[in-house]
Image (cartoon, rainbow, N blue to C red; front, top):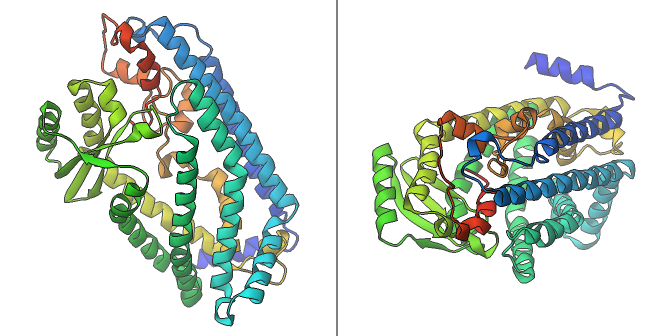
Length: 425
């Protein structure tokens, strides 16, 4: 802890160029990701599938997959540029201190005196900031859903459903964020510089609570879960679970088709009581053996302890993050660089710290990306940075796959390009 305190003092230097440093990190991350995207784009310009897929995938299907992923890559570069310009504008025009001042004035004018302290102010500030960010990102969300995904036949979402999801998400944010923020800030206020362990315990408890509460209270607001009907598939899945000694409690089908043609399957629950969820789109596109194979992949993660390992890694990551935050929480030069000369709100310190840290965080360790099978082949550097799983070609090579005929009929060709975008598997 003495080392962290010495480091905190060393970094708190007047006129330290925090703005330039954070802008440099942010732009550097964007340039790196754009460079990797261009490397991947060259792979997506290939006109024939990898040799291991040559007999299984038709030219038409491969071309559609390449077209889709090129469009996604181009959109990713442009939307990333839009995000960078927005972030730079926020920094250049001191949006954070101005918004902090505005929300404080509104509280003083309209709220009772007991709701004008730092915690109440921070909650109003964060909610206002999130609404602004939601509105700024709305154009790219709309384009992605109703132009890009629509063009390639993935989007099944109506505008009314999009609006409904948008409203529900924001209502949930306004309900859940205040108590979480209040708990977070109160712990730091009460424990001072010793907050790290307490915040880590708070976040670990919050994670466990959300694992339990999300499928029961939140998921049903957006999707319908129906028990998988008795039949061959249910029998085979139960047999698979028994073979893994997986504590299966219930099998569900989720109506993912109401939003997208992409398919997926996953499990959730406590260690002694698990539930498997299968997208209806996966059932539509695959036979029993294929669905069981997909679930075998997911249960394999559990059997090999990957889910437990990820949980422990996330806990170590949280402890690491807040240990670093303890260095910056009282950094006067950081606050001053961003226009907070007289006040040092905890939540502002955390936001600025997050901006400084995020480009150097090894993202592959703290989140699962959602594009693992969206392309049939990938540039090695791009895949190392973005993917948490081997891509399709690597998997087939590992399996020593020697296919002799296409895996889909002419009737299924339209669906193959959709299946090639399967996300989380």
